Every structure is written in structure tokens, then in C-alpha cells.
Length: 227
Image 1 (cartoon, rainbow, N blue to C red):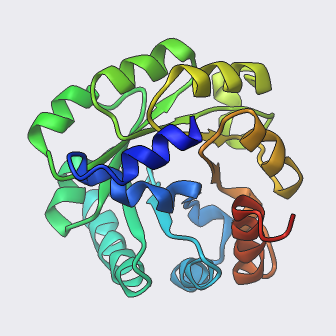
Image 2: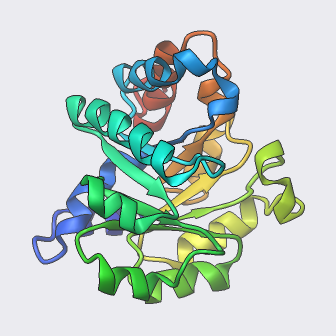
């Protein structure tokens, strides 16, 4: 699956694909894990450590505050040539010039967003092979599959999916599948061997006392530089 995806990224007929290699490490924000005055500094530290895809996922912010925060984060991602993906709010992503939108189970259908905002990368949360296949059929660029392992942020979706289900999803799709939920450094090799194109992270990086160093450790694990 990985080789297929890499071939897709070099296909000039699919311009969005050329940016997808940045998704090897997909870092999802959570302001509750950082002091309020350290949020942007934390993002910049992750970018300095090699992260090249940030999903801004701050569901509890009103539109005006989210727009202001997204604009600030976009300045940082542009500085480091990284992707900014906005959770759920495609219109906001398009308005500020972000790279893409990540759709949840409660978001509009992928096909609708693709038609309205053809220039955006579109990610989709999936919790089963069926939902992942539906996202691919509707022209999503990538999916996150979760929760692979137990994690506080995904407990509302039930027990962990496990590695065999991750393997089934990765084998069944031609678009990148990012493993999400309970991923730490010790599990990178395992999820990659089960077909994951990359990983989605929240606590694994934001809980670190040295975000830049921890980000570099994950990047090295994903690229094989420390193997």
C-alpha cells in the first residue's frame, strides 16, 4: 500500500497527492494540554522538530476566535512549509487559505465538500473499514483510522480497533491511512508494518517537556533514521 501511495504522490494528474507525504506525522492540536500562552510556541517547536502537517482541532472555540487562531497558526505553517488542516470547518479553511479540512462523522459528506471546495485537501475520520471505503469512494485524500490502541481522546468510539482491523483498512484502501489513538514511539514500527502510511498524534507530542525533540524522535522513527 505504501508503494502505491508514493506512486500516486508523483502522478501529475492528482495534484493534491504531491503534498501527502507531509502526513507521515499528523499532529492534532489540543489547547488543554498546553498553557494558554504557550500554544503557538508549542506548535512552532513541533514544526522545528520536523512536523509538516498540523490539524487545528479546537472544537470549543467560537468562529471569530477560531479564525484568529487559525490565521496565526497558518503563518507558522507557511514559515516551515507545512500543511494546515482545519477540523470540520471547510469554509473557514478555504477563507483563510489553509491547505485542507478534516471531516468528522458529524461533518457534511466528503463528496459535498469536494464539490464546494475542490482546492482543499480532505481528510476523513473513519472507525470501520466500511466508513473508510466510503470516504475513499467520495474522493477523500486520506483517512485517519481510530482508535488503534486505547486512548482518552477516543474512548467515546468504544474499545480499541486493534492492529488486525488497521491492517484490513490499510490493505483495502488506495489512499493514505493514518493510524490514530494511543500511538507512541514504541508502536511506530508496528503500525507501519500493519500498513499505516503515517500516524496521527495528540498526547504523544503535546505531553512532552521538549516538544521539538519529541517531534524529531517521531519523525526519525517514521523515516527509519533511528532504526
